Length: 564
Image 1 (cartoon, rainbow, N blue to C red):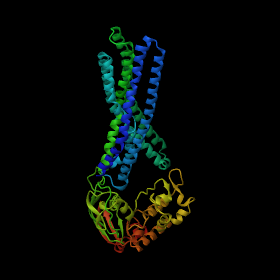
Image 2: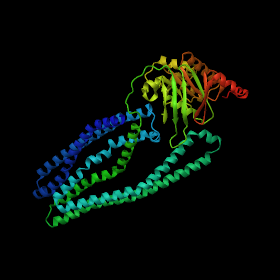
Image 3: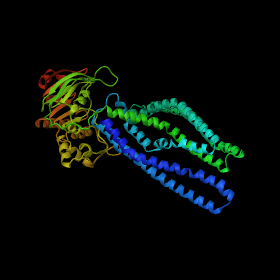
Image 4: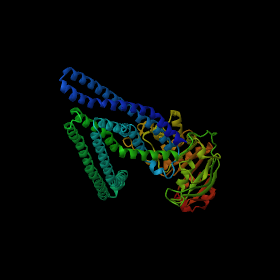
């Protein structure tokens, strides 16, 4: 299974560098013992003997230890950075392939939108303080044992200090968890509302919604800040209590050590060594507490990634099938939107022979666009099968299927990059193939008239194209490589007279080369050049007839208005 192999390969890849990190941590924690040993030697030996050479030798030795400590710590940091890169390279590639080559299940579809954030959460945990907290944690009892060797009373005191600090931190986490979750939900609503205002600024400006929308956004932001402040106040209060407790214990152990020294049970150096060791004992505990929330977040993120991968194709690669002719068949295809019982497409049955032109018409919300997505493999049927040349779309290799089917969605999606990049689908495609696709879409002349031609950038900071221009570029992308099947969803929605004439000629050219064309439209112009017309209503294909018969049934008013 892809989920097992992807996660297993990632774990195996980072196991070796994490083993090196653990080894470096062993020597780092071992070297840290040089500090209390140095202090004990200074107070217990040098102060009594007053030997300057001994003090010099001890100082040189501890300095060398700390130099080695710094070198090992720097190397450990570099290795952890490499671990982060490995997670990004291996797991990130697998996750992105799942999103772009297969359709996520309905349950995982909402989480798939945030997959980049989940991947960053896992990557930062694996290559940051979160992993170090667990690697250094086994040294806490070792340092406790070292304190107990100085004196059992000091060991018990240190254990109690660590336990109290852990309890305070757990209480802080529980107290802040509820308000933080509430703040996260309110923040999401505020961000979504702000994004919606930015996307629809022209509409808001035209209808004079600026004041009311701003006030609404300010109220959402106010609710978010209030929830965050409540969570922050609790966390800050308990966090300050934890810091106060740590400073108290680290200082008061000096008093306990002094009392034991008065009883002649420990030396003077042991007093200060105990304080240093207690600080080091509490450090892994504090690291673990600080990493607790990132650990939970990383675990949840990894769980979502695992489910995302598990609910996509189990096979890494399908067997390459013969180049398809273009026969498309629907067998009892049914699909329901997430969380809804009523199907958007219900028991659809049809067969489109290779080289035929089928136009699907019907009222809005009849399920036409959903059916188009099912026919190109963007969605998987809940029931039934969509076949290409007799083979279920799920059994086609993703790359081969992408080359065999050209798809122009209703909502045109062009990606940041040049026009050439978009038509080439960001692949290693020759200029001749790109120009051929643009020419087939009758978009070449429109593109070369742009100031930068095929090098025109498509992003928020570059030239703005009209909806019709974007639609024609997306059509050229769909025609790259002369696919056997072309599915066009409302291809003339944004086109002017010139663009619609070019589209009509493009469809006729596709018909001439025996390409199967499936169109969804509300305009009679494309129906006239079709072979068959399928009518869809309430998710069902209620009838398929020849285009001439369909046009004969239309009222003269509808034909004159160009509506199908």
